[in-house]
Image 1 (cartoon, rainbow, N blue to C red):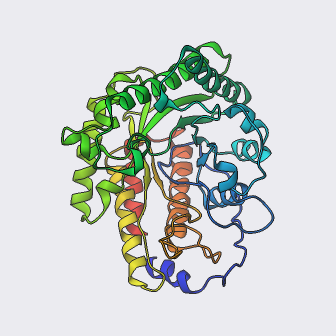
Image 2 (spheres, rainbow, N blue to C red):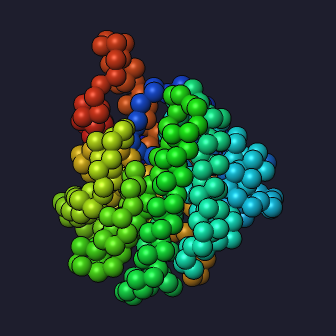
Length: 396
């Protein structure tokens, strides 16, 4: 199987060719755990926006997990026409492409949502500011719950790598001032309260929504230094935590990766307030992981492939609810403009080996779920699914 996957690396379309969207086939109603992103991207193919084009590839690949951006720079990132909007709901409704991809049959929908009100959390909150931020999140959450009532969808609303927001200038060695920690804590508290209230007050059924905080410098907290995991999370009644994991997964073997992630997840979970009514056993997931490759060094693609499979397997072994690979279309380039080759479909329109890895995984696991349900009249427990998924991954 691996030979076939890598043979595809050299037998695919030439520069700029439009890759065909694989057929969107029915999927079993189950959490496949492993997914990818459709955040921006420096290219797209055909006449549709980079958002719709990319999301169709995510779905055609076989995934039932979607992650997109609804941030202020999303239109530029997806090369959509600029729109005026005073809040997230206005922004969403003014851009039909967002509604189009939300309407697709993804069961799990993740969205980066910050604010379009112009209020900056770092400056603190007046009563007006607090109410404005609350209203923005409450109105968007209420709309989504009503609009998708009865669909079985599960929405996760959160932020991009929060420690980079907390650390000015992306300086991981700096110590954020106490005022910034206090104001960020307040920002997350308001957002969580708005979503919780929307769920209580909005009539809906068979649809759910959760708020997550994404962190990315947890090792600092484990060493006693200021970061979100140590200094903010204990004061926020958050539903889930997303971990952007690059600090933990680079330059380590399999055992090193697994140990680092186990320790980080345990550190985070110990700092979370207990909360009832959540759908998964664990409350921390891999919101982002991935590895670079170099098109002029073919051996780096083999290493990228192997390390990605390792993270996928570790995620299943650790029973986390999601592990989201970065990403479908590439938007990572070095200072010379060279692609870091992190995508499942590259700039030339080639579906990379990692695309086929995910696609094969979804096909095998979907067949397993269908057969199991046919025989047992119900789906397997997540533990059994994970055990089977690990066996399948090892065979790919």
